[in-house]
Amino acid sequence: MRFSRLPVKDPRTVARDIPGICDLLFPQLLPAIVSHLNRSAQPIAGCTYVKENLIAKMSTNAAMLFEVAYVRAEQILDNKNEDWDECLSLALDRQSKYFDADLPEKLTELDLSIAKQTANNLVKSIRFFETESQGPRSIQSPEIPGFQWIGQGYGDFSIGTTLIEVKCSSRNFSSSDYRQILIYWLLSFSSSIESDTQEWKSAILLNPRLNKYIEINFNELIKVAGAGRSKIEILELFSSLVGDYAYKLGNQP
Image 1 (cartoon, rainbow, N blue to C red):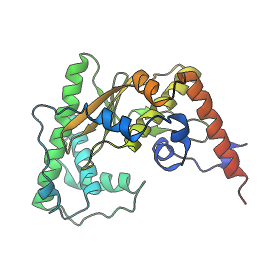
Image 2 (cartoon, helix red, strand yellow):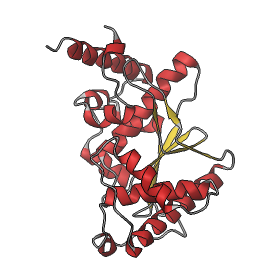
Image 3 (cartoon, rainbow, N blue to C red):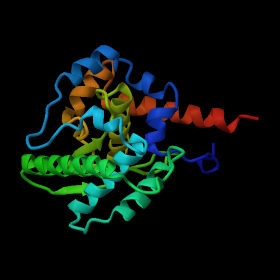
Image 4 (cartoon, rainbow, N blue to C red):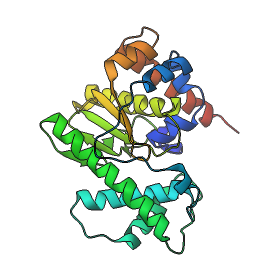
C-alpha cells in the first residue's frame, strides 16, 4: 500500500472522525470512566466563569468567538499589541479547516467583553501551569508527529512533557476530548521510538470558558482505558488498524 496516494488526515481528525479506531485501542474509555475523570476538575484562582446568559446574547457563533479569544490569548503571551482584526482573520482561517466558518462583520461590545474574559482566563491559566511546573516555559502549537498516512498536526500548548489542550464547551470534558489526547500521546510515543523524540507524559484539558481544568498522567489513563494492554501492544494494534484502514480506502472503487 502506497500511503502517499491516500488523503492525508491530521491527528485531530483521526481521533474524532474515523470510527472504531479509538474504541478498539481504548475500549475501557467508557462514560462512567469519563464521568469519574471529570470529577477531578479544578478551578484556577483569579479566573472567572463566563456566564451562560451572556453567551446567549452573542452576535456570532460560540466556536468562532472562542477561537478569536484563543488568538487574542496568543497575542498576550507573545507580548503583542491588541489587534482584533488579526484575531478575526486567524480565527476564520483556523475554523475553516474543520467547519464552515463565517466571519462576522464586526464584534459587538458584548462579544469583545466575552472574548477578553476568555482570553484573560486562558493566559492566567497558562501562566499558572508554568509556575506549577517550576521549569520550562509554555510552547504554543507544539508539534504532533504524523504516522504513515496520518499527517503532522499541532496541539494547543505544551510545557515540558505536558500537553495542554483547550476546550471552550459549555459542558464537561467529553470522551472525544480524552480520545484526542490519547491519540496525540500515541503518536508521540511512536515517534519517540522511531526518532528519539519527546513522548508526552501528561496532559491538561483546560476550559477557560468554565474555568476548570483536569491534569492527566498518560500511564495511569492508559492502564484504565487500554484494557490491560502495554504501551507497545497498543502501538502495535494502532499500526495494524491504520494499515487496515489504508487498505480499505485503497481498494474502494
